[in-house]
Each structure stands twice: as C-alpha cells, then as structure tokens.
Amino acid sequence: MVSGTQRKYFMLGGKGGVGKTSCAASLAVKFANNGHPTLVVSTDLAHSLSDSFDQDLTGGALVPVQGVDSPLYALEINPEKTREEFRATSQLHGGSGVKDLMGSLGLGMLADQLGELKLGELLDTPPPGLDEAIAISKACIMIDRFSVMQFLESKDYNTFSRIVFDTAPTGHTLRLLSLPDFLDASIGKMMKLKKKIASATSALKSMFNKEEPQRDDASDKLEKLRERMANVRDLFRDSETTEFIIVTIPTVMAVNESSRLCASLKKETIPVRRLIVNQVLPPSTSECKFCVMRRKDQMRALDMITKDPKLASLKIIQAPLVDVEIRGVAGLKFMGDMVWK
Ligand SMILES: Nc1ncnc2c1ncn2[C@@H]1O[C@H](COP(=O)(O)OP(=O)(O)OP(=O)(O)O)[C@@H](O)[C@H]1O
Image 1 (cartoon, protein in one colour):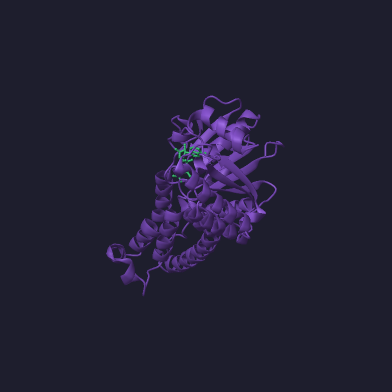
Image 2 (cartoon, rainbow, N blue to C red; image 1 turned 90 degrees about the vertical axis):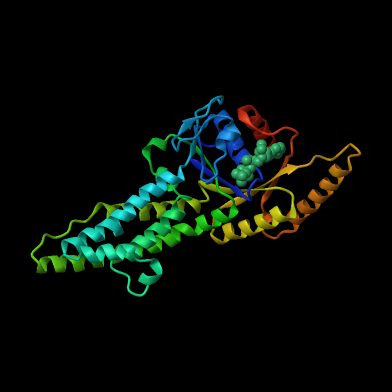
C-alpha cells in the first residue's frame, strides 16, 4: 500500500461504530510516516477525525495533523456549507431566475403565487423552472454526502500521493455509489429543460423586442457539477488508483452488512480487495466466562466470513481489540502497525 509515488485513494467504509475512523486515521498516519504527503478526509456527517487524532481538525478546511513524519492533512467536509452553496445555485436557477423572468414579462404576481404553493399541488402543472429547482434541491440534500468531489479537482491538492477517505456508514455509502449516475441523468434533464426555457423565453422576448437572455452563471455551475460527477464516478472504479476497504467487527450483524456492502461494491465494479475485521478478542488465558463466551461468538462470525461467497474472496485482516481506547497519533501508529502490515 505504501509503494509507489503515484497518487492513490483508499476509501474505508462499513457499519457505524466498527472502527472505520480509527482504521482510516491509522492508515493515514502509516502513509505519512512512510514518506507520503497524505490527506485524510471525512465524508461522514458525524465527523470523528478530530476525536480520533485528538486534535482540532474541524472547520471544513485542510488542517495539518501534528506529530507525523511527512505532511498529513485532515479535512472534515462541512455539509452545511456545501448545502448553502448549492441552495444558492438552486435559487439562482429555479427560484429568483424564474421569478425575475416572469416579472420582466409582467407575470410577477403569478410568480409570487407559485412560490407559495406546495409541491403536491404543483405536480400536475409545474411551472417552467420549478421542476429544476425541486430536482436541484433534492440533489443538494444528497450531494452534501458527496461534496468530496469539489476538492478532488483542485490544483492545491496535487502534491498528495495518498488520500484516505473515512466514509459515512454503509447505507450512505450505497446511496453515494449510485449518486453520480442519478445526478448525471438529473442534471442532463435539467440542462435540457433549461435550454427549452431559454429558447422559449428568447422567442417571447424577441416578440416584445427585449434583449436575448445571457447564458447564466447557474447553468455553468450545473454543467461543471455534471463533469465532476463523471470524474468521481470514474475515479471510484479505477482499480489502478483506488481501493475500497471494508471495515467490520466479528458479529453476525456486522458480517451480514459487510457482505451486502461487498456485493453492492462489486456490482458497481468498485475495486474492493481487503476486509478488516476489527476488535477481535485475543484467546483468553483466564477463567473469565464472559471473555470465553464472547470469543466463541466472535469465532462463529469469523467462520461466517470464510464461508461467505463474497467476503471470502477478500484479503482478511484481523485487528485485535486492545485494552485502551485508540486515540491520538501514538495510538493510531500503534494500531496501524497491527493492521497495515
Ligand atoms: N481495535 C480496537 N481496540 C480498541 N478500541 C478500538 C478499536 N478500534 C476502534 N476502537 C475504539 O472504538 C470507538 C469507535 O471507533 P471509530 O470512531 O473508529 O468507529 P467508526 O466506525 O468510525 O464509528 P462511526 O461510524 O460512529 O464514525 C473509538 O473509541 C475507538 O477508539
């Protein structure tokens, strides 16, 4: 995992609470301590990178992590900020844009009334532009889980040779995987609709001898968003540069969920090769009944993994449950030395 200087992306995902953040953060520390300028990104709505590193990494910007050999930066993407940006686009595109247009045609009152109506009442006869606004705002809610695409293209990040993602729990990851295709199609439809509105408007305006409308900023933003979607979709599927690592714990519920995640990743042709089974109890040398029972239970779950047609094909890495909470760079280095050999 550390060999080569070409940029590589590692995405860690799995059920909530299994240790994704600890694994992602420990992998990032490992990369940085092996000479890689590294970026670790949280796309989980409930960030815990700061807690894991025991440093303040909040703020939605790249924050340097202290205590490692090579540059290591952390980024906790701020979903609120992203949502605001897209909300602004949505308003420009479908809200005030349509309102201004209707206003300029002497239909301002009607535009105001349309704004008061509820979605259900509008479904039968949606006014031009409203479809777009609804679709965009729907996309906005989903996009905050995927806002990572915004920085992937930025030149500032060209120096990083390893990028590690601490993704949101499984359900979000699965929705995220289908998001680029969904948005690609929706934005395509929006753009078509936009063009239709623009040509209808220009015809109307020329009838009233008004100026041709300019291609607006919002359309450019949407087109750019569409390109980003395509880039991210391709990136996810590039087995040369990207690997999705599933993190689980040895319980029946977590193993079942990991099996479903693995099946979905494979169906989407996302490269997945490794399964981390975290928090495995070491063999008990004491008489502790609880430990013996728990270990027995874990062995059953581990057995399920080896018999699972999807999971058994992965490289299975066991990480022991340690007797202290893993926190801070030293703790993460300790964990990384056990997991990422
Ligand atoms: N192998 C381990 N041994 C002991 N403690 C661990 C181990 N792995 C993780 N932990 C601890 O378990 C807790 C949860 O870990 P972590 O935050 O990494 O999980 P997560 O899957 O990212 O959770 P969430 O889904 O809530 O983001 C933390 O307190 C962490 O220190």
